[in-house]
Each structure stands twice: as structure tokens, then as C-alpha cells.
Image (cartoon, rainbow, N blue to C red; front, top):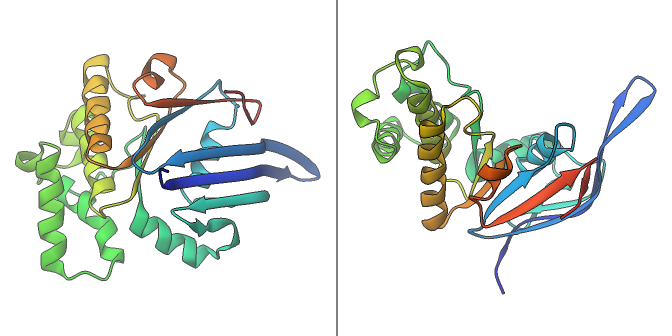
Length: 224
């Protein structure tokens, strides 16, 4: 039996706006195996981003239980969640979220500053992952000196530098042309083949087909 990387058990997420309750997720049950490549899809407002935030330890459920690599995050403090994020989860965002005043190398090294790691090891690891994504020759360039595809590869290198168990990609090709987008998806598939668990959020049904399995959301519920 495959090891479970992520399990959500009867998860609700309710946002409160004044006296009004807005349900974002309703009774969600999801299980993702270790080393699986899963796409989460659905129309705008279906709960995709909320589900991603919960899986990524960026938020807590209102009700239910979430197990991440066996850790029950629904009972954790923010400090514990922060440590878990820093060690196990690599995030890839649609808008890259790079710091324009820093070089590619400095952007990739940044997550390691919060780890118990000496400067030499940080430098070696940052350089190594930039070479993995094919940007060893661009490591001293700043984001605005790079193409969109190169910036997204820097973002992937930043996600990989902590050697995470999971890669969470939120609309990773949304700001790229079709050629660059295909390169990023091919790279995510390669990471999956190398044993990483990859969870990708997308509104694009054709992109979702690149994954091993598709989880479809509608109105905060899993419909298939």
C-alpha cells in the first residue's frame, strides 16, 4: 500500500466577514500518495486556492483533520507550521514572488537563511539547484533582467533548495507563453519522476491532464 503524503478528512474552511460566514470548503476528503503528481482544478471560486493554502500549511481548517506526511497540522501552532513549511514544502507561484533587488542566486539562497545551515553549505546548495534548472550561467542576474520562463525556473530552484517532500505549484504557467509553460510542466513532471510529490493548482483542464490524477472542485466540494 502506497504511503499517504497528504490526507484531508472531512475538512471545512469558513471565512468570517463581519457577521457573515462564507464557506470556502465543505466536507472535503482528499488523499494524495507519496510521489504522486496531482492536479487540483475547478472554476473560479471553487476552493482551489483555499485547498492549496491548507495543504501548504499557510492556513488551518475550520473543522476536520489534515495530515501532512503523518503530521496533524490542524492541531499545530503557527510556529510549528512555519517549521514544517520550511523543511517539507516547496512553493511555486504564478507570479514568481521573486525579490527584484536580489540576484537569482540570492533569491534561491533566501529560504536557507532560516535553516540551521552554514554559509558555505547554503552557497553550494543554491548554486547546485540553479544548475539543475539550467540557470547556472544566470545566477548573478536580477529577475527583471530575465525572461518570464527564466524567472519561473528561479522560483522552482527556490522551491527545491530546501529539498522538500512536496512541491505545491499554484498556476505555475499562468504568466508564461505556451512554449515556456510547456517547459515548466516538463520540469515538474521530471521532479515527480525523481520521487517528489507534486500538487498543481490550475483552472486549465488541458494542463491538468498532464498530471497522474485530477481532483475537481466545485462550490467548495470535491466532485470527482
